[in-house]
Length: 310
Image (cartoon, rainbow, N blue to C red; front, side, top):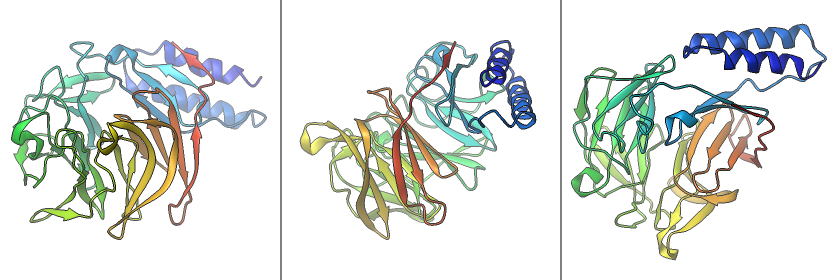
């Protein structure tokens, strides 16, 4: 009986056409079955769409690790999302730049990546980052592979792009995250520095240096206005992978925890009071849980993928 509804849900998802509405309908039916049969353990209500370098390897990951289900994403080429940056704009996932085309902007409609006519102003093949701003109405896209592009930024509102302030320091692979509700970047793969900067209404402002010469980390802003830096590479120590979880709060850096597996160039997303970190090297998925009131880190768990369905 425990596996019955899960099998029904999985079969439903596998038979869906590439339409997100079908997937949503499957989960609605699954939730109703669980409600009508309380003897069944409640499954996760969090599902994360993961689009790796190869689009045909995309999958839906449940927040509790109970399932990993293949997702069909249509794209012009299988490497279409390779090294692209991601952000939500007006409730839609957008990807920016990347190896396939450094100036492209594409939007995920249902299960298809549709390229828009609007382009980025600068070539951003890799090393760049994107971040939702202004309550998801816009995205800021910054940095890149070489030269002055490692400092430049532009803002996308869903239909147009405009140049914004350039940072004072380069931030290739320095990421973007919100600190005190302002876009912030830390470190650089090229120049291997420790510098942190935040974008104010009048330009970029220096923040306290990170303790290490860091890059390839993930930046996540919390609701308490602090910024977390997860993983990365320490270029003061030969580029060794990092496991540290550091917090910038009240203009001070403090280590608050450790990943269970060191990693860099991973991806992180904050949902509810949990950060899901997807490792690039280890391929591990780790969940960082925070308490409800103050967003203090409580636990770090290596998620066991209990069921993979292709």
